[in-house]
Length: 391
Image (cartoon, rainbow, N blue to C red):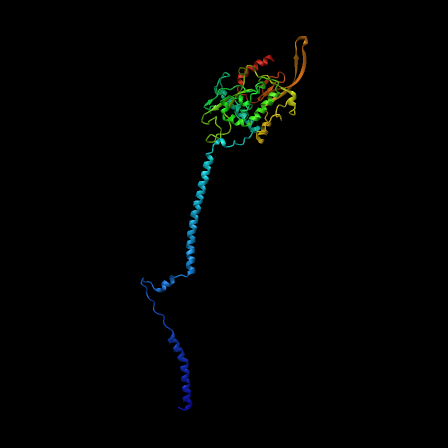
């Protein structure tokens, strides 16, 4: 081997060492991972490390768990609060129901329309005819307190309710005195009602309008030229007590749903036996005084009556009540007798209370055809016949 070849061999050998030695050193420097050790509980450490969560993940899981629990708690608290509020409302309702009924205001009263009145009148007439056929009505004296079924829309209680005695009440008071606006005594309307009826709920209710009633009676006394009852305007009353509907108590004080009507107050037109004189003659009323109301023989409405204690809506209905019929009359008056007699003519109004009207010739009160029958009118048949014969 020549020297040049020998040098080339050495050079190649050095190149091999330079290339292979670093790679061998690097391979020997990398340590092998130790074999996995088994823990005391039989599970390897790798599995245990996988179970360890980061703090963020742990806190997120805890917050989610707590959120679920909080929502459940919140729902429970909400249900409790709602139940408490419900119990509170129930308690308030019971407290309201336990209030005395007398302290509660009366319901707003509405006037029946004309169509309802006419329909009710027709029903009453049919009912009466049926009961006459069945023998419901019997001949009775004026003081007989047997039950009577007669309807009318004239006097105070009867304006809005049936003024009849019904079997719904267990007892009825005896008939009181005849009510009339007597200027000589000046006795108010409510004081003319019997003492037992004054304790009836209807007249206790009416007492709130006492000022208007007294004003009306004072007005009537001032325009009437007739000083005694006339025009079939004087009535007497009887009040119902007890029964299943508790007739004498206010509808608001009775448990259940008793309607505001009827009032359980019966009224009857006064007869000659009650008054000592028949009231079939129409009332003589001051013509000039009625002209001040705006029209000839306009007895009602009148600005002379103070109705300020009546509710405005109800006051309008009171103003529109048609409870009378009047006609003008020129009557001849005589002063003195014989040759010394002097005559003068006076213009007056002759009035009767509903359901009666003055006869234009005799000026006696007669029943308006088609109108309801006044309670107690059957007891006046003799007076009507007698007066007609004299006329």
